[in-house]
Image (cartoon, rainbow, N blue to C red):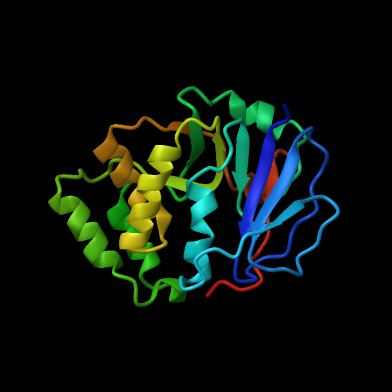
Length: 217
């Protein structure tokens, strides 16, 4: 069975990027009935219309809908290396792999400081969220992971559901809730130690390029 590469485009935040043939099926979940592609299988899933589109996009991102090897990529990402799944699979030990945060931040306290000025998080209880996590005994400097690229083998829908509940309870800033949930559940995530920003820092050696979103508010 082929591996799957999938993305979620809700609220018209991104156009679908052209992608190379890497021996995988490309699937996009969206609420846009007009989204078309020669590369992607577009699945029209206008779920939970009462929620912000950024939050709706989290459902299939966090709760992996596949029971086979799948690679989630943010809508801003264009794969450049046809061997991306093989290369990332080298770090897939416990069944769920994602990149270490590229900022060198290792604490949700620092992630909070970086997130508060962003317009897309205005009105969200980010400070209260982080304060609550620390009140539960969550340690500082536990680690921080990026969530725009995730390779999974399909075993952990239960963990994904719990992660989604944190997003529903607090905010769609999923990088704040992931470390806390890893700690609370005793879940060992596989860390990809590669440079997520290699397309900027080391052009020609990247697995993918990162483009800007259509808009980021």
